[in-house]
Length: 147
Image (cartoon, rainbow, N blue to C red; front, side, top):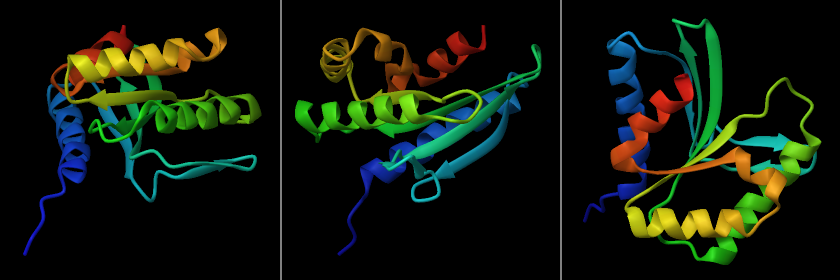
């Protein structure tokens, strides 16, 4: 019996969308590491995103990095708060150049609004680290960050 892993498919779909943008000449996908290669320990904090992405923007000759969290609406608010807290603590301990954005890709508007509420409940200074978008608007989010 084979089981379809929708989570893994969504991770792959995000990669495909990035490659479509690349084919269109808007970005260059410089790096795409899926879990477990995307994991990173910062200080004593283990981050376990679904993917780590670096894209280069040819027009402005800049690179953007972000961690992808593919959310299938299977984790409750406490689990999400735990993830947010780990990212925030990692940001505070970061010794690299620029801390990557954290992009949550969600299935629908209801879940997007729920995650935005959870993020808004955290420290105000942490909120700019996180972006939430529905899968259907993932490429729009990438475009927005290119400007």
